Amino acid sequence: MAQLVPQEIEFADTAPVTAEGAAVVVGTPDEVWAVLVDHPGWPSWFAGVRSCQPTSEPASGVGSTRRVVLVGGSRFEERFVAWDPGKRWAFTVTDMRPAAFRSLVERITIAELVPDRTRVTYRMAFDPKPWLKPVAPLLARAISANLTRAMTSLGRQVAERR
Image 1 (tube, rainbow, N blue to C red):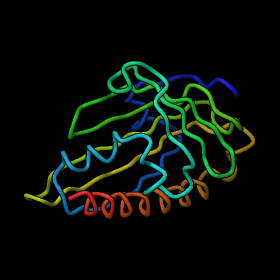
Image 2: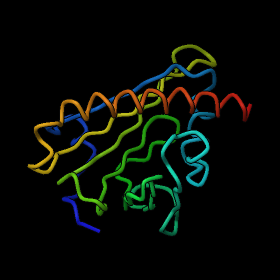
Image 3: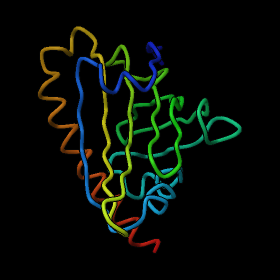
């Protein structure tokens, strides 16, 4: 694993590179939240995630941690820096393998549009390692498309749980 420089939630707005995906979900903010905080359930709706497990007690709230493993074997150690039920959460990555970034924050915001319609926005904000900077704009576009697919899939998961 390679240590990253931990950041606070503000980094989601100030990072050198950001990627973002969003979807309107049929469901309430609380229903969306229930899917998001079901860490072991992430592989069922977020393509590419092999496992997502809490690594702290308690498993939720600011300061809690989890480990995410992607299908290709990449691993991320995450620490939550925001936890506002039904509204937003964010984590900073503290360690990752392979180390493509110097810093990384991911933030989800949840906003009720009308009853039973909720916009979910997932932003990934990062400072790439120097060797990755030339392709960072292309990478951000690909990540944005993946995040949009994930939020659409999250919406299907919310519908299945209703």
